[in-house]
Image 1 (cartoon, rainbow, N blue to C red):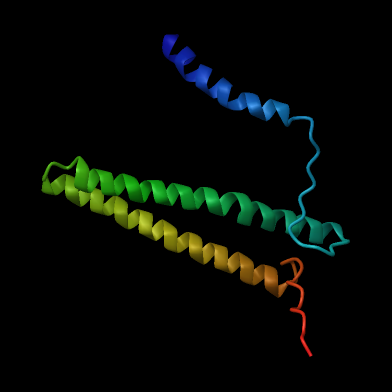
Image 2 (cartoon, rainbow, N blue to C red; image 1 turned 180 degrees about the horizontal axis):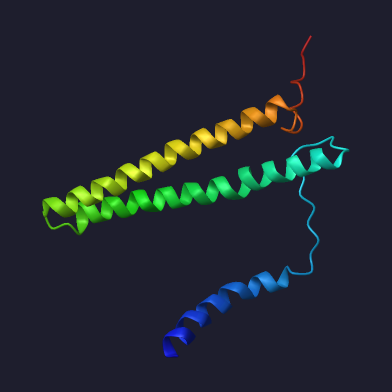
Length: 128
């Protein structure tokens, strides 16, 4: 019971700020100029992927990479088996980075192909 209370207290404190935002109505718009419902749904999905999912997965890949470095070089104490295990974690962290960059690029290519990327930058002023 004590361990449950020890785990629940920090989780509750972490969730308290979310209660302050519970009454807000947030409209997500990744791109501009959408009038149809399907276009708005596609924009919301792209927003969730680009603004939420990709950064979280980048952070996880980075943490796995750092944990592999710590495990391979700091806490291995020269044991070849633990160094090998740390190298595997480093490799999986790098693979995670490559997959996330590929996914991010693919989502942006699809968004640009179907015109869901939003507004382009305004043209530069000309000097005559």
